[in-house]
Image 1 (cartoon, rainbow, N blue to C red):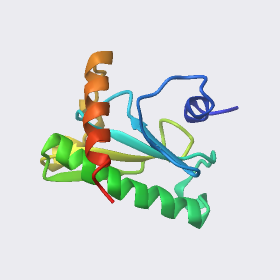
Image 2: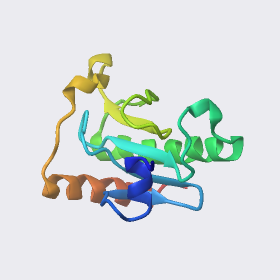
Image 3: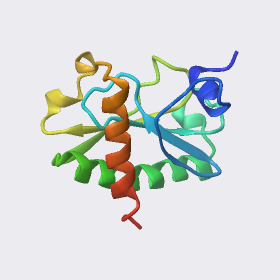
Length: 133
């Protein structure tokens, strides 16, 4: 049974895309722990991070570094935390969460933003991402 992320990749479900290449896809998390919260996923549906082929795992990490720099600029946060939990969707995904302190990484803080707010965050991050090599 395909995961919600596989449905996003196939176009069955919408997303606020941040970046895409041949191996990975990045988009705003539907439930934002803090505004600017992005998920980076492999296009290959793999449940556990330790089962992701090395080339794809590396690409997720390299893209996450670039996107995190854009998130930091877009949000003015001192850190972008990374979390791999894997409980909510059985498809490896790396959370990139803007943070000012450890409590800012608590998933209990997550909330849905309006469509308009999501578009603003999507645009901000993409604009900064264009400047990052």
